Image 1 (cartoon, rainbow, N blue to C red):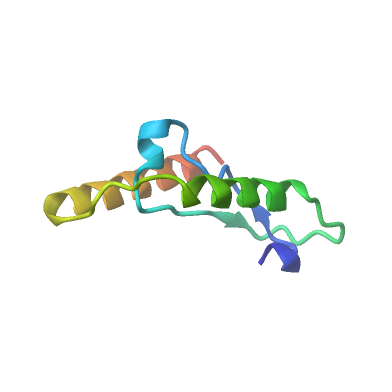
Image 2: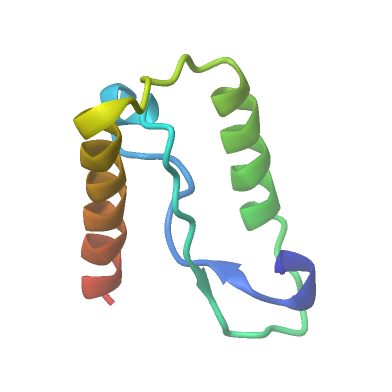
Length: 83
């Protein structure tokens, strides 16, 4: 979608290392289609991909999985509320 002109709404990585271990990762895009593509968003996503390939994730068994999913949703909602 970045190739179609959408932009990252926020950072694709969480604000701290502990949250990095959450197996759930929501990424929000903004529909401002621009003519000129900026490489910044592509670089951020590539850095996130590299970082996440070496990150050990927490297991999502039982209640922990629900809690981790809730945390991801809460972070996404908080970032959307700032707009």
